[in-house]
Image 1 (cartoon, rainbow, N blue to C red):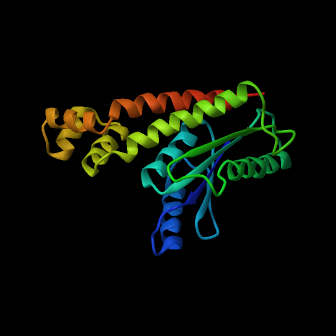
Image 2: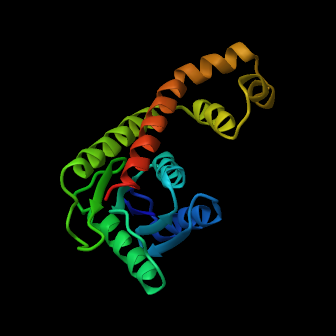
Length: 207
C-alpha cells in the first residue's frame, strides 16, 4: 500500500476549485483506492500496488504545478483495526515526504517503519527511496517538455493503441505519429516508468 500527497504550487485564481476538480478526476480513476482533498490546496490518495501508485503520480505530474510526496511502510501483515491504522500512518508518511519547501514537479519519498511511524527505514530502503525519486524526476522532466500534440499522441499509446491505430485516431500518417512520439520523449517515458515501477515493487517488499 502506498499513499501520495499532492500540494498545489500553481497560481490559479480559483485554486480550491482547480484542486477539487483534480481530486474528482483521480477519484474516478481505477488507480486510486481512495482520494481526499485536504484544505484548499492538498490532495491525499491511497493506491494499492506499484502500478497504481505510479499511475497516480504520473497523472499528477501531467497536470503540473503539484509537489508530491510518496509514503510507504515496511511490509507487514495488517488485520482489522491495524489496517485502518496502517492507512493513516502511510498517509502521514506521504505528508512528511512533501514539506512546504518541496517544488512543483518533484516527488519526495519516505519508506517508514511500520512498527515505528515517522521513522525512516535505513539501509536498502533509503537507497530504494532515492531511486524512486530519481525515476520520477526523469519522468517529470520529460513530461514538462511535451507539447499538446505530444501529450495527445502519448495518451493514445498509453491507452493501449498501437502506433498505427493511434495515427488513424489522430488523423495523421504513421510516420507523423512516430515523429510526434519521438519529439515527446515517449521512449524515455517508458524507460522512466519501468524503472519507477520496479523500484516501487521493491519498496512494497521492504521489511
